[in-house]
Length: 59
Image (spheres, rainbow, N blue to C red):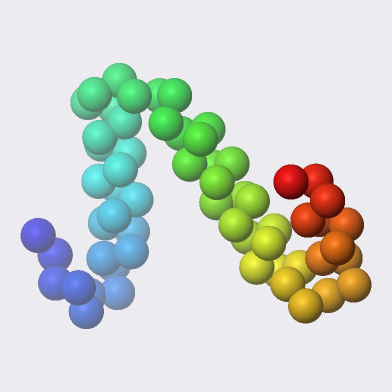
């Protein structure tokens, strides 16, 4: 396994996840992870802004 202080370790995690998807044929996990990342990014970026009340009404 890579050294955690290695700057490429972030990309190693993505590469390992991609290899998992290819080897196990778990293609349905890709869109789920993508949507979860997109939603979490949306919540983090709109936190404390005037748009936040409108975002939270969606959920």
